[in-house]
Amino acid sequence: MSRSYTVRTYGCQMNVHDSERMAGLLEDAGYARAEDPDTADVVVFNTCAVRENADNKLYGNLGHLRPRKVANPDMQIAVGGCLAQKDRDTITRRAPWVDVVFGTHNVHALPTLLERARHNEQAQVEIAEALEVFPSTLPARRDSAYAGWVSISVGCNNTCTFCIVPSLRGKERDRRPGDVLAEVQTLAADGVLEVTLLGQNVNAYGSDMGDRQAFSKLLRACGEVEGLERVRFTSPHPRDFTSDVIAAMAQTPNVCPQLHMPLQSGSDDVLRRMRRSYRSERFLSILAEVRESIPHAAITTDIIVGFPGETERDFQDTLDVVERARFAAAFTFQYSKRPGTPAADLPDQLPKAVVQERYERLVALQERISWEENRRQEGTEVELLVSTGEGRKDAATARLTGRARDGRLVHFAPGDATGIRPGDIVTVRIDRGAPHHLVADGGVLTHRRTRAGDAAEAGERPSGAPTTLGLPAFGAPAPEPAPATPSCGVPATTGGAR
Figure 1 (cartoon, rainbow, N blue to C red):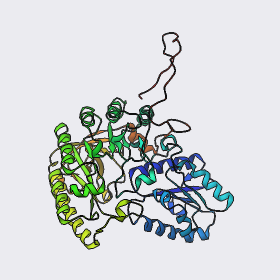
Figure 2: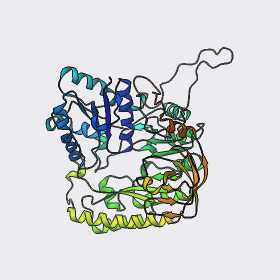
Figure 3: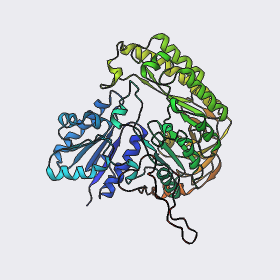
């Protein structure tokens, strides 16, 4: 019988997508997904290192597994992701029952390392310093029949003083547009309705190719993919946000009216100490331009409270920007000191009590704004892509859940409609706005069955087949020799978008 596996994922969308690749690699190597994760023969942790409690969470979970490992030495535990890249040998020293440690740059090595650890009967630690194989060239076990992640770049060229990601993910490297579009087309051909383009700074795409408009061109090209109904992207950086991207968003029908753009702080002094290359007025001017072109866009953000040296005046500046920005939602964080980042050594680290009090004030302000913005949706008709796993109370309330085109979460009562599956498209009228979601209890106005819904009902997933083989294709393509003389009117070379 094949050995079973489970992958536990922490952190950002990049990690979620990497976990799909880990699962695909394991299944290609003969492993089977565990029906009960608590009895899996192989447990893989895909870790995050952004928050201070990431270490405690990992070692706590590893501690819980130790009795199982002692009782069953054939069980294997693997730790990958950003925390593995950062801590390296520390993991096996603190948790010597771990079998494999692998970094962000060598996901592809996971099955080999597991087999080597079994054969050698000792832990295998392999941390590559640079990307060896682009993750998107690897097989994947996609989690969703109707939505898929597509990585367009890896790494980050910024030097934000609070962030450890560049040292763990490396410098930014871009996939060629043709490879990205090939993956998008493959997903759409498999029935996927929505793709999210991923990058640490997704709108900096094109730096490898010397094309500052590469990202807007990619958005427009996605608009030509047959069967693809929704395109999202995350996360852009204000520094790289340009008018051609806004125009592409507004003019490409399947690009969703949604924007997630991190603010981090509304204080120019704090932004300077964070080494964020924009100031509050520049940020607000981008939002104004987006809303002028896409009036119904929902804009969300990230904000850090309590950065070293943040004064009450700095924090008030943040509150003022949040009030002016009218975010649909904000992911708010208390500053987390990360060893190895410049901010960890800055003076004037704030007391926990001060940070907590400011955090609570910010959350209260954003809750009010989110509720007001959601109340504005009452009475409107919205199109939903029916989802699964996002409505925790659906069973108790006899509702289903879907995402509107602007990204808002909507819990809806199906009414007389029957046979609605995840992946289907419905329209509903919003009855009530709450701070974190919308409610539609008047029944479904229209229901369109989709190929994605068929696949979800059948338990099928997109193939996730690699779009290229071997080493990754980064940046601009190499110059090609002049084509040979065409025969029968057919060009000697053909190619997709570059």
